[in-house]
Length: 208
Image (cartoon, rainbow, N blue to C red; front, top):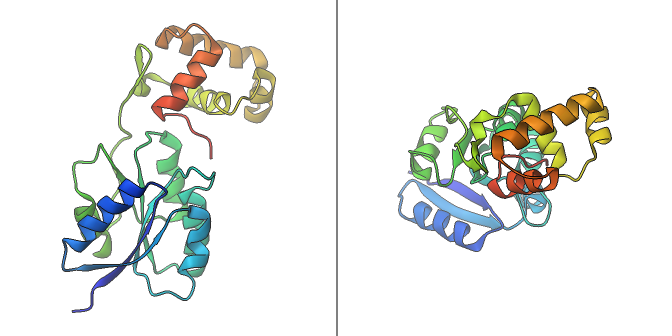
């Protein structure tokens, strides 16, 4: 039986080593390639026989696995892709589905192992978590934020002003201020800047 050819795309050496260990422990899979940047993944894939990609989302060089997966699905739609991340950013699940990414796995929070998700994905299943992992942001949990608050928070972490956020979301600046005020009350953060930093560190609001 021919082994399933796997490509790893992850900028963290330890993560790549762990994935490699799992792959080598199975008789079903064969590691054929490792890439440490999502920006390099589409080019590396061209001309190479790969059946499955383990694609990290957030890369230290500024590239991201969602954009890379979108590009890959356009010229190699038959290749299965599993998005992997440790960040509980809610928008990534939705975007992954829209792109056509086959499965989504949280590195630290998933009940299933990556091998189990790989097996199910290669059987044609779309394996997605029921919900995003819950984390603490100050005194609040990430699930306490509304969808609109998350949109505001995501833009705040980029350094956008209230006026810029209002323009982007097509709402008034006073509405933006109200959303921020409610989030400050929920989290106990003392300033807009502290809230943005807490959100970015926790991984709940990362705009890519």
